[in-house]
Image 1 (cartoon, rainbow, N blue to C red):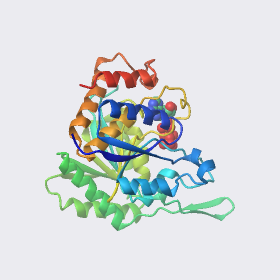
Image 2 (image 1 turned 120 degrees about the vertical axis):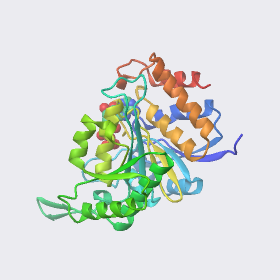
Image 3 (image 1 turned 45 degrees about the vertical axis):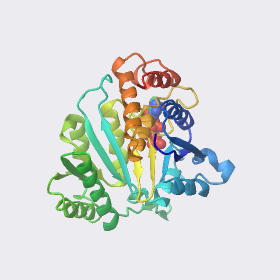
Image 4 (image 1 turned 120 degrees about the horizontal axis):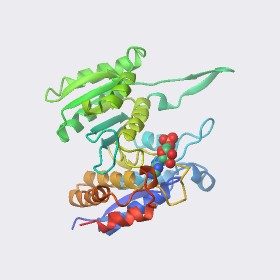
Length: 335
Ligand code: ATP
């Protein structure tokens, strides 16, 4: 059995504590060699800590090198910076990796989707540099750098190579944002030259969205700036059955935070109705990253068996199962 590994566990807001608890139950039932260190982040922590991202949370992730995180809420309009954005910036979690794969048994328009969205996580309009020029006129700055663009494009090609994937597509709007997206595209083209074993192409983001709806099987690895990545990730989640299913990883040079693509789902929070699959599959990605491949495969297989059997479905997929029923079904299928 492998050595125990400490993992920072962040509940987050909304459905966060519920899906984190379900995932923890499965990890414990699978006897994964993990020890959990609970830390706080999210809007609900403002009253307790006066911040949505206490320094102790960042220190814990840095110390452990790895975290599993529930979604955190960010208010619309004036207010503090999102805990997610702050965490990604402070830990330099520059690459967001979101594998989007059809799950046999989940009925959608397509059953052959297998792509990866690689999203730049540290800059773009998420730099949060906004100001009122004069009343009624606001300016938001889109920051794109050669360093971050080159780093994320290289990550995408390395990921493609490691996962034996064939093609990387750069997603942009360089026809309109000639300087910023133009720089991103230049960086992509330069990096692509170093990877002659992998096909490369570029696609304008609006066309990509249309193509994804019509011919999603055309795509393999997609790499893009932060905001496009946010939007395209949700579109891709819709292709395979919704936000309840798609996992994610935020990878940095010294740590990694694993979390679902979905948000806090306030409409179903606290009701025991959420689908924990996205966080469970994020935990599978975490186990793979920790080189716990056997445990990762066991949990992934158990989740897939529950879907293949088709008896236990949460509400987001048209079923009536509660989260605890789904969690128990996964535990029962652990071989
Ligand atoms: P954010 O702005 O934080 O990314 P969002 O606007 O994308 O959030 P979500 O909180 O992800 O919104 O929820 C969008 C919809 O998807 C809601 O109807 C929600 O109930 C549903 N949803 C999201 N996650 C899950 C889940 N794990 N299980 C079931 N339904 C979910």
